[in-house]
Amino acid sequence: MSTPVNLGTSAAGAGDVGTPVGRPTATRSSKVHPVVWFVVGLAGLLLFSAVRSFTDANNLTSSGLIAAAIGAAMPIALAGLSGLWAERAGVVNIGIEGMMILGTFGAGWAGYQWGPWAGMFFAVVCGALGGLLHALATVTFGVDHIISGVAINIIAPGVTLFLARLLFTDAPGGGQKQSPPVTDLPRITVPWLSDALASVERKQIFAVSDLAGVLGGFVTGLSLFTVIAVVIIVLSAYVLWRTRFGLRLRSVGEAPYAAESLGVNVYSYKWAAMTISGGIAGLAGAFLVIGLKYQDGQTANRGYIGLAAMIFGNWRPGGMTAGAALFGYTDGLQLYDSGDAVHALLIILAVALLAVGLYQAYRRHFVIATVAVAIAAACAIWFFTNDQVPGALVKAAPYAITLLVMGLASQNLRMPKADGLIYRKGEH
Image 1: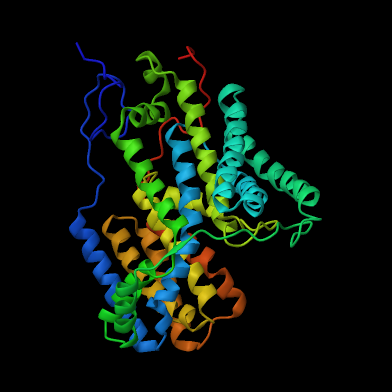
Image 2: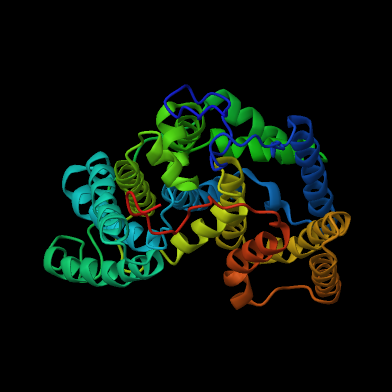
């Protein structure tokens, strides 16, 4: 007789839940060995350094660019984390964009009156309200998850624009589509380390200066908000994979009826997940406002990019963060550089896609491998036959490059088994 799995025990080291109770399975770890990450990171550093030396595009690894990339990546990472919490509990959250918009308004309204901390708090509250609305529609009433998410994305901009016209029009520095400026959070600089890394960066030593530039971006003018966001991502990974609450929540997204049979209140965990998901999405919106101001349309579809990053990361925090970093780097590049570095990025993209093509060929995904190699060849030809990239393409580069790499590199993905399914207690 098989022994039922106890979802109330410690979750330390537990993998994904979703196998029928009592059925033994052979599982294969999807974790990548740290040595592999080190080799990939070292190869990337050498590639960027070589391209920088060859093209004189010194901004490719400058500390200023890295700082801009971090700022651009954090809202995407938080948006992806919002989707991760929801989908691990079996709720597809297409409404992240709308919840981010609610968060931007909350941060703008409270931030200019009572400061950035109040802005962050109200952004979380406004985003959580969006998450609760999505939970009410999908979990309680059984509305299709996609329809509910799209509805939130349609409603949120209209509601916030109406409130902005009502509350910001007569405010000092405000307007019908923007709030007054919001004070920034403190920024962190490690004086002696920042100065030493800047000195090494200026010497343009192959690989060494590039590494100094990358590290310098993390210790020079780093926003306290960024530190908070990183802590939230790490804490979320710990809670979801190393606690009893996380194990039960993931079981709800994998096998809700099996979890129900073991005494788990599926509805409660889905509601909790959506509240957290909405709050994190609101915090992602606040990241765009704190230190600046609320503006209509400032999320610029980052919620959707966050979802793409989450899928690219195979519904795991580490991979999701890597996808957000990819977008953040390309976005920071087009904001920080006039276009020379984006042109140099073509040859880096060509090498990266060639590596993706070879890997996919090794995995016997020959169609994807062929497409990747063909695009790599096109990028290389473009790089050697043109000196610049058109301005419109420079602005589109973050979206195009991110989706291109994600689409060609992401294979063998496994979403939670009950993701998007309507659950009704006792129906199984």
